[in-house]
Length: 235
Image (cartoon, rainbow, N blue to C red; front, side, top):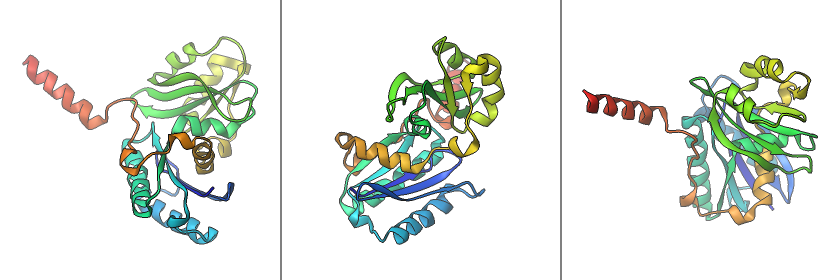
């Protein structure tokens, strides 16, 4: 099975290639440039390194969210274009689920935490003790304190994602020895995990036109418009 995976949902732009069922290439870029500048050259490098073309792919996978509204759209639109041109299907991959694979085999719950700004985090919880993620808590946009209060009162809890640098001290203060915060190399979403999830769930493959961003809350522009209209209605 050949898969090209793209992630532009967070601060790291990533791409990976699965060739004949094995990860052949993976790249992660946090270089201070916009994803629209970095991801196409990264994909080109991945294809050149693996000797594959878009026509050789069985499916194109994209992280559809939650995450940066603009970032998610970049990856989704790119993958839809590749798949449409090659006449191949797409696969939507959840950012939080993909993040949980960073700690596959962990003997507790893995809790991905993404910085959603405005005092909130995009969060969920997964059991990855058997390797692949099993969802324990649904995706939510919550203040960190509310998320921590929703978690089980016993057992180990691991935290990954771009929210970890901002929230690690608060997590340790609230959970003590129960909290595990991995080193930086295990905190960011890996595009090779996107390949693994897409390969595991062929039943979720879809036509390119069906691939859409996944948001846990309305984009800022929509929220501001709604607030303005509400204010005008009450004037």
